[in-house]
Image 1 (cartoon, one colour):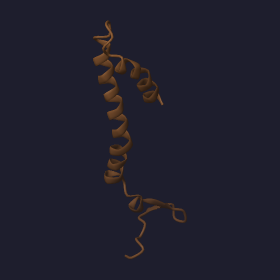
Image 2 (cartoon, helix red, strand yellow):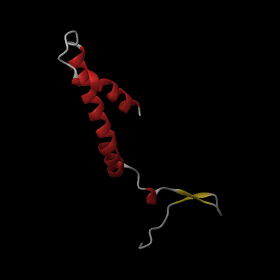
Image 3 (tube, one colour):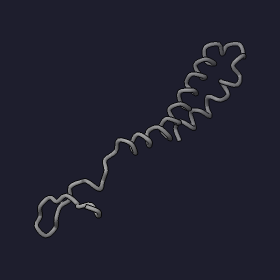
Image 4 (tube, helix red, strand yellow):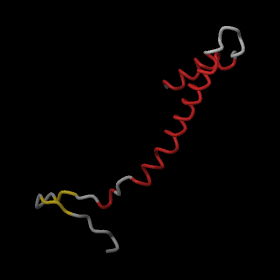
Length: 79
């Protein structure tokens, strides 16, 4: 939401960059808008892929056996 609001606020500066007095604001707005788009795309696609690749496998985590109150390793169905 914050990136969207910031991006929408920067769009007029990016579009009207050739107006006199905006020589510094135009390149800065392009860089900020590009960074917002890049970071949003990375967060949407790359971060979940990394979590899927390197995340914990919950099938192999230790669990607590309620009857004996000890740690137990779950046994796989085929083992």
